[in-house]
Image 1 (cartoon, rainbow, N blue to C red):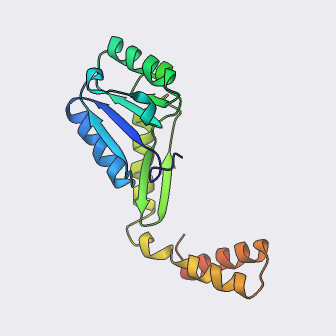
Image 2 (cartoon, rainbow, N blue to C red; image 1 turned 135 degrees about the vertical axis):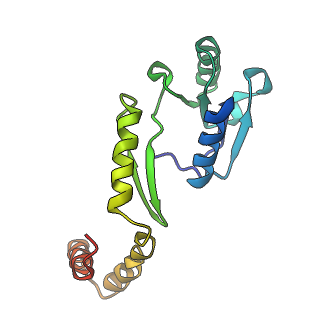
Image 3 (cartoon, rainbow, N blue to C red; image 1 turned 180 degrees about the horizontal axis):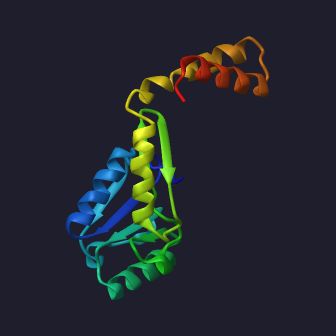
Length: 163
């Protein structure tokens, strides 16, 4: 996982896929996101940590990839595995709970199917369930060990019949 709160991200591309990726990045907490529509709009790749490319022709993707790598950026070109240092994942977010699904770029459609299933398994109520973290802090204050805290968490979740 890339820390989207601290990484400076460049999203470059066009069309509906660009706007969908922008919305997903914003949903995931990207706080330092620049949007560009073509490579000529980018003055200096070295100011970015991550460059993501969507819906551009292969030759443009290759040029962007080369320039971004020369600037030591991590790069993801959507649907083009050879230009990816990482793969964008499908996500299910329930407040602080974030479940990610990836097929390492092999089958994004399959990842979406799995995401939809996980979406059903973890309904929106799970946003409140993660407050068990407060219990965790209490147990640690009581001097419980790591293993004991894990066991208490397991029992707490079972008692609440969440899974």
